[in-house]
Each structure stands twice: as C-alpha cells, then as structure tokens.
Length: 267
Image (cartoon, rainbow, N blue to C red; front, side, top):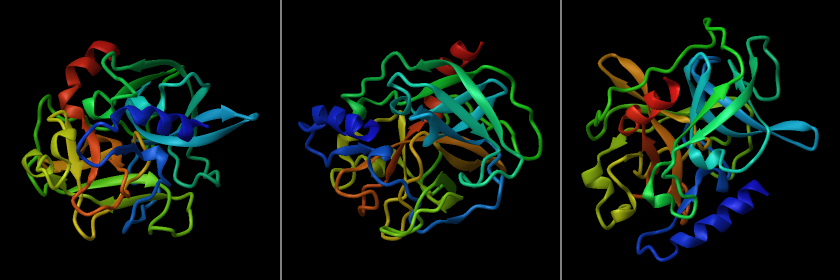
C-alpha cells in the first residue's frame, strides 16, 4: 500500500520534460554491482520499520546523527504510521545481539516538502527517538558535512542499503554497499542527464554504464572528505525508466544544504 500511494503521488510530476523520477521505495531496492558490507562497517546506518499486521517491516534506511536523532528521507515518513528504528543492524533476518530497537517519538518533515513535487527537493526528515542510543563499536553517529559543502565530480562515495546486488537477482537481508562517485551538478543537470529536475540542493551519484543503482530510500550516500566519511546525501529518487539507466544516476538530498534546518530542529 505504501508503494502504491507513493507512485500515485508522483502523477503530479508527469508534466516535466525530463524522465520521471520515482522514489527509491517504489522500485525493488537494490545496490546493483554492490557487495555485502562487513557487519557494522557503516555503524550509523539504521533500518526504519513500520508496524503492520502486528509485526514490523523494513521500509527505508537512515543515519543516526545524534543519540536521539535519525536523518532519513521525507517521503519515507510522510504517512501516519507507528515507526521504530533498528540500530546496529546488519542482517534483517538474524539477531546478532548488537541491535538496539528504538521507538520513534516525533517525526519532523521539512516544511517545504511536497510529495506531489519530488523534483522540488526538501526530501529530508528527522526522527526523534524516545531514548538515547548506546554508542559502541557497532553503533556510532554519522558525521555531518560542513554547511554548504559541494564535493567535486567523481568524489569517492558509497551507497548502502538492504536489497538486491543485481537486477532481477535474489533479495538478501544483509546490508549492501556499492561505490557511487559524485556526479557534479553541471554534468547531472545537462539535458541528456537529469536536466532541470535536479536542483542545486541535490547530489547525483553514479550514472555510468557500470554504476551502482540504489539502496534504500532515506539511506546515506557516504562520501570521503578530508580523510573521513560523511553522510553527504540522503537517497531520494531514481529514473522512471529504470533505476540503473545510463546518465540517470540515483539522486540524493544534499545534506550540506540543510545543516541550518537540522540544527534548528535538534537544538
């Protein structure tokens, strides 16, 4: 039902000249060309789950950005549901003993988010947890990029998420990773790429013949900067022509464009 509702909401963007964007949760989540990540090697990665039929189901990724704060995509949480967050997760079907199950007490969606106009941007939300995360070797805070940071073309990044490693391949519950270098705005906004659909508050990743596809909606684009990884992007949308379409890279919310808004919520 959630996927159907989101597909319906995208009908409003049909007037765009460029190929139509689709939320990552509207296509089978996958990291094409990726590999299984070492357990807890991305210790800020979370699994966002919703309650349905008496049990919880994984729907999106996200990043732990404070002991009580998770960053994800607005389109993941713009419906009324009972949410929980799993920290320290690696295999969705197995309990390693490293997981922390956290209740979500509040959802803060960017006030300019409009699910009918995904190409406007503002696809970012913060979740307040009901209790503090216990930081350890398996659960750590993501580093947020400096405000307004713009990384250069081909800057090394990794996308992470749960799903397939090949188009049409079997689903795996283990966390995947794939190299997805930055495509700069000048390139990604060309008419034969994404055109005007991509705004300066977004960042593109991949888009070549062997590029990775997408991880879970809301999950991080982890990019190297000054010797460390930052949660530089939030997985937002892909092309309606197919998630690994040439010159239609996965599009992320650029986190560095929203640092002031995030600070105002988490203060």
